[in-house]
Length: 418
Image (tube, rainbow, N blue to C red; front, side):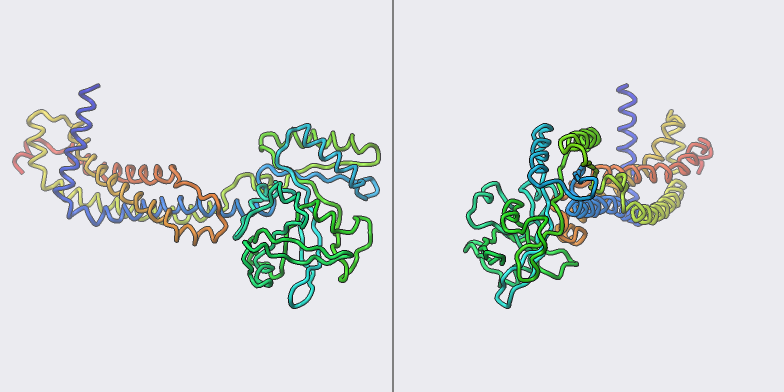
């Protein structure tokens, strides 16, 4: 075992010495290999960042895997009484020890601005909603449990709303007036960025605070001069481990239907992206395209190495003959010649991987690829570095195969006379 290991190490050292001797000849080919390895590795690394941006954007819209939504209704299509549904909901959360759950109510609330009153899209949620939907804050912070105890309700506004107020310092506890049958002063505690397609102000309120402001669900809308206008009963969302999603769906459907009694039904279903994408990589086609181009560059680099190795081999015929005459086996000669290409391409591969890491982890590149949509940047994928090094090693082995076969077939006498 020790002898085999020493032979391998000796062959690698010898190969490296030969590469150093002929470094000028192999440099151009190795540059091509390094560039190709860098391209392959960078594509995989940037693909991980872009994929994370897509995932986080989907999670902001539909929740993290596995996000469930509970929908309950009577047979006539109407919603169960809010107080009954609230009790059923709380009982289910306690029974299955669900930490992340939220009521979600979409409504419109009249708000007084300096230039006049306007209807603002308003979402009533519970505190866990921010974590469930990866809500990011550009200023201030998301709701906390203490916000439920405020005498003046806390409100989170988007950047459009904030700009319309003149961007006051949150440290001064700026307020806004919510119009209704009884005007309410709300404290702005945070600002979240508006999406690219949004053109109007929007805000979040805690579900209980919104319920205190809004008209009853079954009441007629109060119109433009009123306060909040419900578009329907609240929806109920929860976030559970993906492996427990199916059992919890079945259990919730059974328990909620039973609790509501005859004449009502409950439906529980997944809303997160993983339930309909099947975990497929949306950037797979791009990775394959760039990977194919990088593969062609690797192939060209390999052909260059083959040509250089064959030319170099002709100058070493006499050396090989002398080594064979002193007892070097055909296997040792074959391995030594082939390892020269392998060692060279592995060094080029390491350089390419290092360059790829520097590119992918550059803050400017990360911001450009993520477009501000990533909060949890992934670490540089180990598989990307492995793919790059394996590709370089394979190319080196293929490039060294032909010269190694030629070296083995050289006759000792002819080689010495060369």
